[in-house]
Length: 348
Image (cartoon, rainbow, N blue to C red; front, side, top):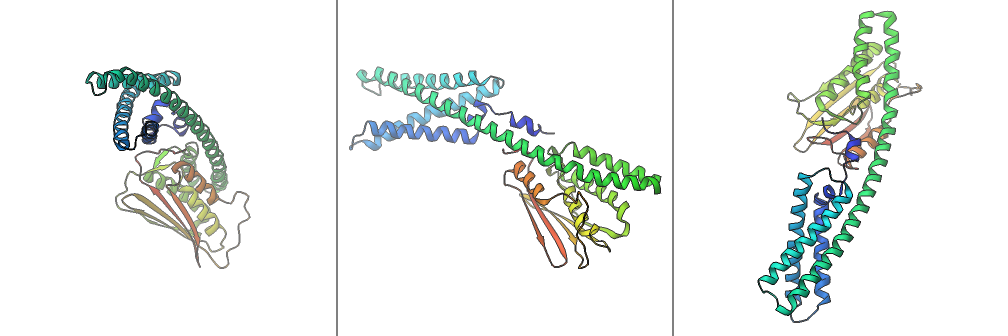
């Protein structure tokens, strides 16, 4: 089980951000911009490209060495506070600059009269750029934390809407069965327990197989209520992969189909559940029949709104998952596509 979404929201740190792909790319871009500025400040038409090439090589080398050192530090000392991390970034960059420029001066690649000034100037520029870059990264982290907290609050609000819906429906069914069939009531209570457990884990990591098992428990619970009016066809692959999904992703789609395709029809209907596994993603299609004589349901909690599910997926997958709903002549079809992931990494 991966860390919870709230733990992920609090995982931001200066070194972690810097050593990620975006942080490294930002550092290299800043380094190249600095090389351009230095080249233009010492602009000479005859050797501009030579100066630019030398400046780029030196600054990119210092940047790469510094990032490598900071990455090692982040692995060895992952619990440093942000103030210490900021000091480490500045110190490593300045020391790297000092060591490399001293080595260049030692090899006498520059005129003797310029070597000391070159070392001092390079170290001073390094100190200034490092301080500005640390401040920029700190502002970025604060913004990311605020955005993460907002996204988490949105997700919690959406999840809070999910819990009462099917629990309310299931409790009604359980109350009816308690008077008619005690054995069926016991089985329904066990199914309800599974659904209740899932409701407390909304947003956490689950698998496609577990989600399908939970959906089948929900259908079994509803079949006590609708009897022959509810028919479900499962079209599942023979070998179910260990595909990661957020907990309680599929059950709301089944409930939506039951409410709008079965409950609203006097004759009931058929629900088809299809699962297709691709190389990069998995597709789940839930379709329910629609009768010409169907009447809109008037129940207070008439299922889970599809836009609610769409918002949850958008927050968790940051646009990598998609869900499309389409009404056809005699059926309603919802297509869910999620990327294959080893664990849920919410990109707030």
